[in-house]
Amino acid sequence: MSASAPYALRLSSANLLFGLDWYAIIGADASLEARRIARRCRATYSTPVTANTMSVGLATLVERRNRGNRQPTYSAAALLAH
Image 1 (cartoon, rainbow, N blue to C red):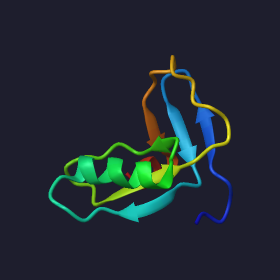
Image 2: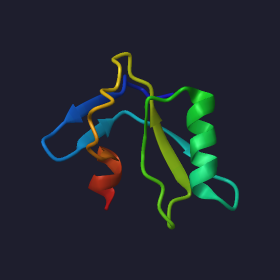
Image 3: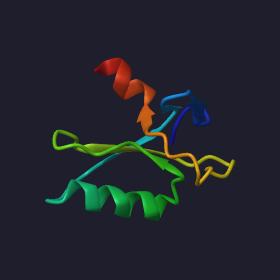
Image 4: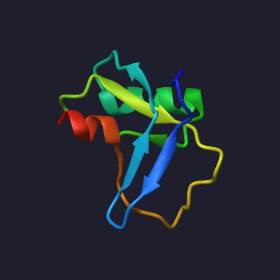
């Protein structure tokens, strides 16, 4: 569990997530495994999975996600590390 509550910062071009819980991905299909973990945790947000990613960051926020909001969502920590 995160030490602090997750927080989504909505910008004009993207959403940045702070305070994610990170889970290791084990399996051949990383995207499929990441979606399974997100469903099991009932996450409202998840980080994008790429070919080099072996983990997924998840957050469950109390507020409802705006279905009309099609902006990409990124982990603030992953962007800083990159």
